[in-house]
Image 1: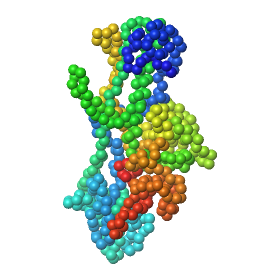
Image 2: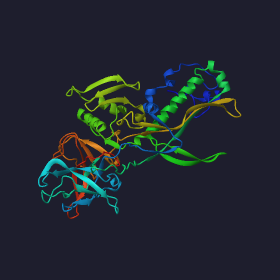
Image 3: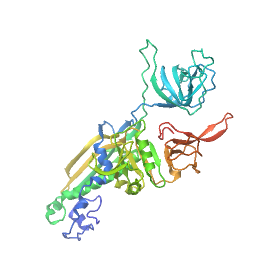
Image 4: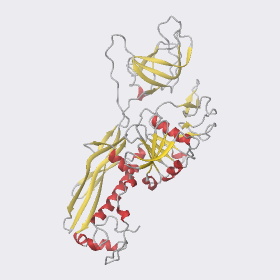
Length: 495
C-alpha cells in the first residue's frame, strides 16, 4: 500500500503532488485505486463496535468514579486465628475491608469447618459450622459471634462454644435471623470501591483546499474518499487506545488559552481483575475450565464473547473435539452481526471473533473473554462533526470530536495472556495445571486451576478446584509454605 497523502498534512494540490501515491510531482495522473483501502471495515475495530452497543452513560465531568462490581460481597475472611473452644461468644477477627459487612443478627457459614450434632458431642463431617452475629464490638468494629451448631460442654447446654477456626478461613454471608417480634435490623452496608476513569477527548481533522476540491474530476479520489480514509484511521487508532491506553492527567500550555488539562483513558486490557496466564496447547478440558470460571462466578453474564488474537484463534480452532461429541462447534451470525465461531458447552456458549488490533499490539497469543452486556460507554461529549472555513486560507476544515471512555462492569471478564514470561505475571493471575505433580517453580501467591487431580499437591486436590501456594505460621510462629484450596473470588483485589 502506497501513501496517498502525508500524515497530518492538509490536502492541497502541492502536498498531494509530493506524496508517493501514484501521482507524479507537478501533475496528476489517473491510476487504479483500491477502493477496499478506503472503505470502513467494522470487523477491523470490534472493540469500538462493542463500545457503541454498550450501555451509554452521559456524564458531566471527564473524571468519573467507576464502580466495577455492582454485586454485594458474599464472602469474608478471617485475618487471625479464633482460639480454642472455651468461649460462648468471641470477637471475629476479620480482614479490615470485611469488618463492616456482617451486621447483627446475620448468619455466617464457615467453609471447611465441621459443625456438631444436637448434643454438641459428635462432629458432622461435611455439614459446616454456622455462626450467628450477636453484636458489633465498639472498640474494634469487628462482629461478635456465637456458634449455632458448635460443640457443647454438656448436651443440656443451651448454647454451643466456639470451635477453633484458623486464619484465612472464608465465611459465606447468609441471610439474617431475627427474633420473633423483631422488625428492625441494620441496613446492609453496600460501599463498593470505585476506580477513577478518565474520559479521553479524541479528534480528527481533514483540511481540503478549494482548488483541490475544484479538481476532483481529474483526480482519482474525492473529498468523500479522503474523509473515509481519515475516519478509518481515526477508528483504528481509537480502537488501539480502547485496548491499551494508560490512564493519565496532565496540563499543557495552549497559545492564547493558557494551561489546560489533557486526559488519557485506561485501556480495557488493564481493567481486567482476572487474568489467565496460559502456557502450552489448548485442549477441550482447558476450554471447558475457562467456560466454567466465566459462567459460574458471582457475576453471571448472559453471553461470552472471546475477542482473540490470530495465534490464539488458530489454537482454539485446532482443538480436537472428537472425544467430546456433545460439544457443538458451529459458525453463526451473532446479535452484533458478526460471523463468529460458536462453541456450545454445558456452562454456556462462547462466541469467538478475531480482533486484529490485538495482533498490532503484539498480543497475538492472547484474548479477552468479555460479557457483552457488562460494558459501559461513558460519554462526556457525544460524537459530533464540524465544518469550518480555515481563517485566512481558501480551504475548509472538516472534523470529528468525541470525549468518552469504555469500562468493564462486573467481575466475570477474563484476560487470557499467552505472551508473558513468568516474571511478568501480575498479582491475581492464575494458571491451569494438568499434572499430578506439583509445579516446581512456584512462589507465594501463585494460583492454579487444576485440570487434573494433583495428589502430590494435596490429597484433597481435585480436578476443577483452585489451589493457592501460601505462607502460614505454625504454633511456634515459624513460617511454613503450604498448598490450600482457594474458594473466594478469584481477582487481583482478593489475592
